[in-house]
Length: 155
Image 1 (spheres, rainbow, N blue to C red):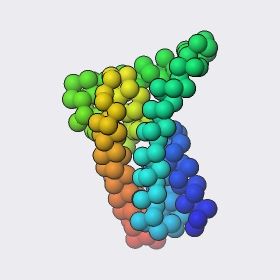
Image 2 (image 1 turned 60 degrees about the vertical axis):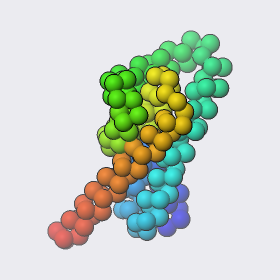
Image 3 (image 1 turned 90 degrees about the vertical axis):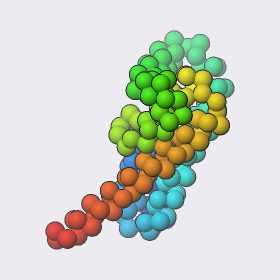
């Protein structure tokens, strides 16, 4: 169980899945449903301070390299286009909704980049990301539990 929980936490930190993959992985590997939610949620929350540090400090050092700059601008454009209308128009609430939607390309990574690009205050952006992550985790957690219960009924 601990190994599966650690893998779920790593999925929750990963930009390839976040808690959208971590929670279902944990639940399908018989991790306690509450541990799965709490640890995957907290792992997903950790992304914001790491990304802010990266964007404010490390990004500036690497930006002078051509290939890094090209890749960073591509990611920034995608985050700005995906979250741009919501964050620009609705600010705090738009960021919550953008992070909350459990679809690929939305989430705390794109939400953090968008809040950085639009110059949102760090505390408000962090709070918006936490609220969005929480509701996203609840949606994924509940839908995974319901799907697993439905599968048990069929067999």
